[in-house]
Image (cartoon, rainbow, N blue to C red; front, side, top):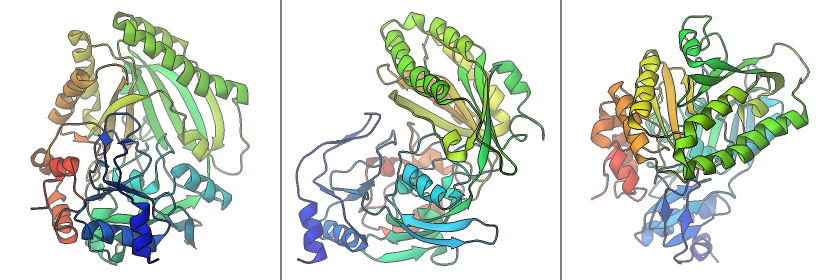
Length: 456
């Protein structure tokens, strides 16, 4: 049996339903495919083209948008998940080539076993590497870019079924478009990403008043520039926050507390079990939300500990929610939060989830939300059982007035015309997309909205 025949057999037509993690998007693909290797992936793409079907790739389904939705072939890359090659660099790090379907948690473990780590991460490790870079996943750190900024090479299957290696020196424009490309210019089969020597972080989590945080943000010794990684969570209906400062430890220093029981209480019992219960309560009785938030914020206590970087970056997140995140110029953060606070209190909207604020360095990735400017990220959430449209519409209006750019994998309403004004290289991206996928094989409704149609 030929590879094309095997691939077609695995992508047997049926009407099963796919749903993303947040349950904001569903799809009824004509076929599902899980190619076992590059040969079968190429055959899957060619077979879809022969049948006139669109094709999208899905990872963990953690995007809140319809970026992965298709009525054609939905591809999972779970079998393309091995570590292919490690090339050591002069600084003791490495360029690591992995299958595009590897989950971040497995990549982190594989790197740790080799004395390596990614220099920055978000707080979720369930995504595939392809999905994470393609939608602009980032962590926090004023001197650090998001995951796409760490990419050094890509292996891409084009709409024509060709396999291309792309890097800053080989097919450079395709590389620039594909390293944060929403899967619109081809299927990522492998990713080469920069790793650094494994490191320990000292984490210091501490409740602060919101006003104190905003006053201490700026300056070389401020919270943002004075720490390797800084973020904070503001509890709406209060003026309280939880701050998180994470800094690299110099030299070989041992792990320090909290102990296993304290970590379980903080990260599982309080952050998941109790948080789920309080959100269910406030969903039923919204007027209790301000009081519940105040109690939650007052019960926070400081903790300080040292641990391997991945243990500090990543947190278990089991409470289902919906999210909108906007990247704004860093200097505009205090004004944006003040306006959001005023709207929440004046509107009567009840918000049980903290607002998350993170930071990133300016970068040169074409579609990065931090492209060309020092950036603050403001993320608003609503519990999955609570309507979110009113809050998100207000937050979007406030953020866009400050020149905000929406996270590509999180909920927003902007279209291609509006986004063109925010991204100086968006027309360059569209040119690459039109050249690589002139028939719109990788298109869907979400991409048509945010990028514009490329197909007839």
